[in-house]
Image (cartoon, rainbow, N blue to C red):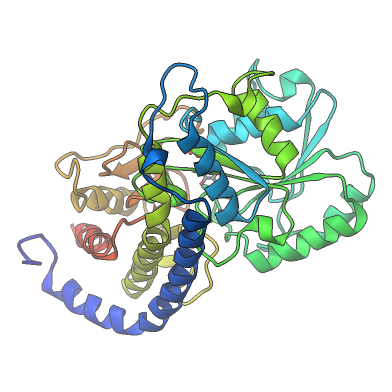
Amino acid sequence: MYQEFGIEKKLEDLAVQVEKEIAEEFEKINQICEYNSLKVLKAFQKYHISDMHFNSTTGYGYSDIGRDTIEKVYAEVLGTQDSLVRSQFISGTHALTVALFAFLRPNDIFLSITGKPYDTLDEVIGIVDNPSSLKAYQIQYEQIDLVENDFDYEAIQRRVEKKDIKLIEIQRSRGYSTRDSISLDKMKKVIEIIRRVNQEVIIMVDNCYGEMVDIIEPTDLGADVIVGSLIKNLGGGIAPNGAYIAGKEELVELAAQRLTAPGLGKEVGPTLGINKQILQGLFFAPSVVASSLKTAVFASRLLEKLGYETNPKYNEKRSDIVQTITFRDEKKLIQFCQGIQMGSPIDSHVIPEPWDMPGYTDKVIMAAGAFTQGSSIELSCDAPIRKPYTAFLQGGLTYEYGKLAVLKAASNLQN
Ligand SMILES: *Cc1c(COP(=O)(O)O)cnc(C)c1O
């Protein structure tokens, strides 16, 4: 069967050995999965989720009990006062944009302490000119770069002591950079340092790809607000689109007023039949995140054995579901991404090519054989075509499908 699928015997044997070596990591992932499952189940029970919450509204979407209860369940799971979980958010970028425009006012200063934020925020912030950027509204931007994969704690403390910063952004996942993801230990330390000298500044975490990778979330460590996409971790591969903003009540309210309109806020927003999928997605999320982590751990060890640089290493503690593999060769990078596509359930017959995607500076190749367009909690692999030719692999609805696609991609490297 493996050979018919185009996976060489040599790789099949190597996979057996890899799985023995990673067994201990899988055990840790299972424990986190169980804990998060308990959290989700408790939240469902606390809010008496029942058939009526699978309702649907159209038009303005007044009095959508399913939507309102979903937001309570999300808040419970994420340990926050409130949340905004909406399909009217087009993507994670949109939710981050809504949050930034909701919390910041002209002449406010916005500080990123994890270096330059995710590529799609360049035009939102005004790092790349856009007449609708924060910069065009006189919102100033500053950044403090990471130093050797850690916060520049001293520089951060010095900068926030002045008390003129309105909002600090921490990006948990690495985005399209080769830095490590931010561990929750580091996040805890930096939040403590900030709070010691400044109680007012809003601490916002871009939590994309980070949800349920551990048993706590940044909001449990004192972050005021977190933002993420529903076609990533918390959508569990079932939510058809959307994003969330969760945190302090007054911040969620500001975000709602910005997403819809001042005066309307959370009261409107038709759910058009997706409440059941959002709830079912959250229900599956702990297990789907665990499958994604297992796929990443497997890929990390396998590709390392094949001679490529992988980050994180298979036995390193993770803070997101992203696995990078550095090929130092454009052709190999493209072959690997194409191999992931060949191993996917949807569109396995098409061959992805690098293209100029809106919001990104370099050409990007995206392997995405997913049920939901652009979903990256389903196994996906993308890469900006730039040195050192690093692929960003993430997702996996089940470990078995994830493993098969990784083996198929590894086989394709031999061509
Ligand atoms: C995915 C992601 C985003 C948002 O991307 P969308 O594709 O717009 O959902 C933002 N930040 C990080 C770190 C991400 O991984």
